[in-house]
Image (cartoon, rainbow, N blue to C red):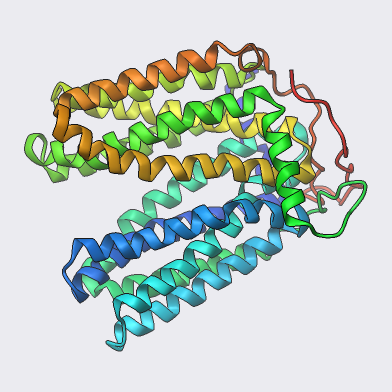
Amino acid sequence: MTASAEKASVLAPLRHRSFRDLVAGRTMTHCANAMAPIALAFAVLDLTGSAIDVGIVVGARSIANILLVLFGGILADRMPRALILQGSSLAAATVQAAAALALLTDAASIGVLVALSVVNGAVSALSMPASASLVPQTVPAGELRAANALSRMGVNAGMIAGASGGGMVTAVAGPGWGIAANAVVFALAALAYHGVRVPRATPAERTPARPLRELREGWQEFTERTWVWVVVLQFFVVNAVTAGGIQVLGPTLADSVYGRTAWGLVLAVQMGGALIGGFLVGRSRSRHALRIGVAVVALDALPLLALAESAPLALLVGAMFVNGLALEQFGVAWDLSLQENVPADRLARVYSYDMLGSILALPLGEMTAGLLSERFGIRTTLLGGGCLIALATVAALCSKDVRSLTVGTGHSEVVAPAASSTKTATTAKAAEPERSPAP
């Protein structure tokens, strides 16, 4: 295949209007999600100057995520996923507009911000599984790999734009206007989601809504596929270690060794690596994508080792760039593996269990990193974290199911897209109601 043909195949999903609208919506949603914590943190500091209050307000959102993400999976497997995303974005825009109004009129209090943060976290939790599981409904099965790569590139670009743009607006105009801008971006995301037109992933038999039963069904789908829970356990360890090492100990060490500006560069390079990684993995044709993705996760240890040894800035930047490449290799492989091997009408619930593991890992890593560094020192803690990532990766690769799973076999458990910008609508293939576990 020529270079131009490869590039065309990577961009092929963009022919489908629903996919383009979904990518635009996800990009703006993640842009808004990256803006919000920055503006909110400075809003709290302006009100009370207390770091504890910042933790309470920001933590309230995380608690709502933890409590409701599984129910978000149930909702996404029962209702049109695009409608859920549209409604959640409108709700988030309304909540942020209310927070901005309270701040700009000096009517805000910590109690008000906590309440609004809880509502925003609830909205986010209910929409996350729908967002992750909607991609395969917008493109043909043969374009799933490229579609996931492009979608994740949009997400990463949105996060970069949101973090930088949110910081600039907050610094120049103040937290109130920063949150107001956040509300506008959420509203634009809702407008983009409105353009997503796809057939529903409907099971053969629809039973009355029974949340506990549906949670058990999702848990069964999650546990009977060994490769799924093995990789989720691997990433529970990886996410906990990197949250503590990069988000907590990284800034602490950078403050004394590299400087704050240099640390900002390091984080930006990581996201740049993720963007490039998304394009590269979109061109890949490997059928053992999950095995490769799981293996390269070991490279996540490189930034921790560089920080532990106070390596020259150039080496740290290189380590973070490689880390970004590795994360996208895994991320696309993981999405593709789930979308091709989990029934479409249960996919969102499986995603919700995966997300719950990640959400729980982050505060665990952030809380324990500081305690461990005080007890054993920052260097030892970072080196230990790198070893844990390596051990978790080796353990995951010991699973035959992880090593043998293949993707891109020409079939999928998802329904076909309703239409594209260049073709007329075709009859969607219904999702199969039953399927044996992946090997």
